[in-house]
Image 1 (tube, rainbow, N blue to C red):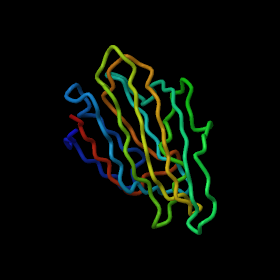
Image 2: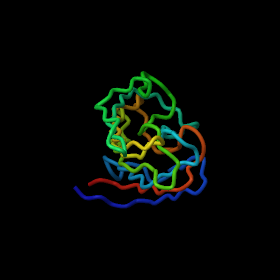
Image 3: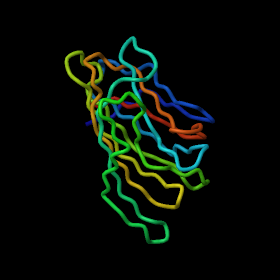
Length: 179
């Protein structure tokens, strides 16, 4: 398996970070590596949504599941894995959470990888998995896991990332093709 860097996107007080080119039939699998995404607001979830080819509004229908593990900075607050039903979507069109409550202190952010499978297919639904680690606003280390599918047979050619409240203060997203 080899990764080919397609593009790099840097946030700076950005409401969203949209990738509107480069997702095409060149690769069957795309990875989005988000590194030190730092929110402007406290206790917020880092999210994503996609557009089908020719679509607008980043509102494709998804079915998803989400769970996480956490451990407190001071040694307490251990839990997990914990299924978090309120972060799932059952044929929802909202942005899907990749983590749970990232903090905005100087030493808090989220990093992880979202993998999107066969986005150019016009026959099958589009599956994805994501794994993230973030420093929660109440000083917890959190591992988040998300998986699901985008319920369209149209090709996906755009993706948007955002925090569920406030701007992306800083961070980088690298898009790779997997061969």
